[in-house]
Each structure stands twice: as structure tokens, then as C-alpha cells.
Length: 240
Image (cartoon, rainbow, N blue to C red):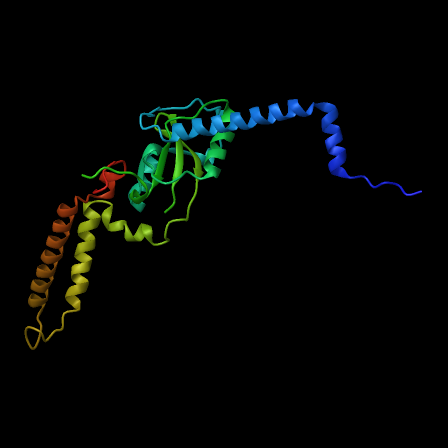
């Protein structure tokens, strides 16, 4: 006597059909998928809401991960150090990844809220800015605290912090110009102006070099409307 093997797909289908009629199942799936589409559409609308300036969301604090809570001062420091912007998510010009949407839905379900007032921390190049590489999505908690929802993309270049150091503020910029002027002055051959270069000649060349580089930097800054990171981290203008 040959026993018929158990075919699992048939068994699970039989079990399902005993629990729910096929037509009812189709309706349930359709409703579920339709609800998912509506939910994702609502989240996309919230992310691209240019008027969405909510200052807080009613999070359930017992469910929050402490390592994801940041004060605006912490965000400001990172933006200045790495020359990033912290702006409304509506200005983000790229597509939000599906992982970010799923993360928003997960948090909303856990906390039983609809999140609004999203902000993105990223380089200026990924924003739609007015004329005058690792995004982070935040939601406001109130009192200048923000909750990190999701991050995506490639990490920043390991030398970005060092490369952006001169642009943090005026003091860093002038010190960098000073060092660059000193370095370029040492590259000038000693016999270019006289057979033997004196300390006085070196200082005069250094001052000339410093004045020349400073002048070029000021011209570039005014021409392209550039500013220091401490002044532009929340600016919506591209030429800053």
C-alpha cells in the first residue's frame, strides 16, 4: 500500500479555505493592499509637505531608543563640522528609500501616531535650494529635541571633517589662509630676488602671499555668495 505524500501547499490551502472563503480572502487582501497604498501616500505627503513645520510629535517615551534622541545643539555641531544642512524634508530632491518609509510606518504603528515635521541632515547638493552623501531623517520631539528615524546612502568621506575645517568660521578660515601662505612662501626659491634671502625678505614675501590669497578668497566668497558653515547649516539658499 503506497501512502500519498503530504503536499504542504495543498495542506495550507485547505486550512485557509476552512477558515475563510476565497472571495472574502480576496476582499481582505485588496483592503490590506489598498490601506498600505493609502498609508504610504500619506507618509510621502508628510515628507514633501513644505508647510509641515510641526514642532513636536507625541511619541511614547517608553518605546524610544535613547541613542536616537538628539538635541538641536548636537545636530548643529555636526552640520558645522561636516558642512551639512538641516532642512525640511520637503526640500530633499531625491527619492526617499523604501526602508525609510517602512521605518516611519513601523514607528507610527508602535507609537500610534502620524509623524510630521520631518527634517533631513545632508550635504547641500541633495536639497532643492533657492539661489541667493549620507542623509539622516529626523522627526521633532519638542523643546529642540529630534528623533533619528532612518539614515541611508553612503557614509561621508573620512577626510570630510578635516577638509571642511577651514569653512567652519572666520577664525578657522584665517588660520588656514595663514598656514597656506606660509607654506607657499617656503616654496619660493631663495635666489629669485637676491643671492641670499634675509628674514626681512621672507616676512615681506609672506605678507604679500597672505594678502594675495586672502584677496582671492574674499573675491571668490563674494562672487559666489559663500558663507561659513556656522551661518548656513539651516539656510535654504544654495549659494551659501
